[in-house]
Image (cartoon, rainbow, N blue to C red; front, side, top):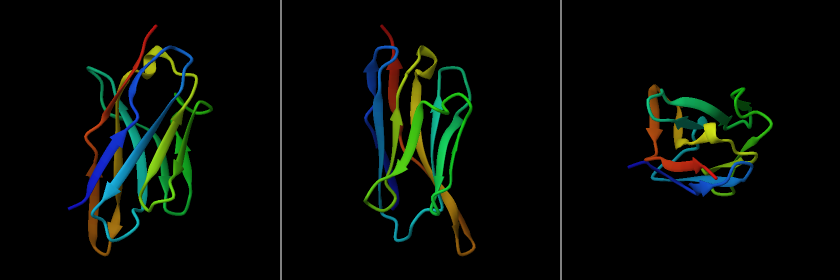
Length: 119
């Protein structure tokens, strides 16, 4: 069974930094896409950063220049380095893995980690 577990969330002051990690287990292959989403109360879950197995990276306009997504040394591990945090970054952050394995389209989510930006 594939599991994704996010960690690294917490409370930080505006302008501060956090590093989120997404560790996975149970997969026998490398995920095609891994991404970070965030969801604030009353809003839809939004993709903010993604990385492919080939290393292609994309960011949403709201985080570009402040957040950096990277793959860890362990297979299917991703990190999100967040700097210059703003109050509007307050949300639950989720990790997602997705892609195509043969004819099987897969999508896995972590349980989320809370990030709160406040003075």
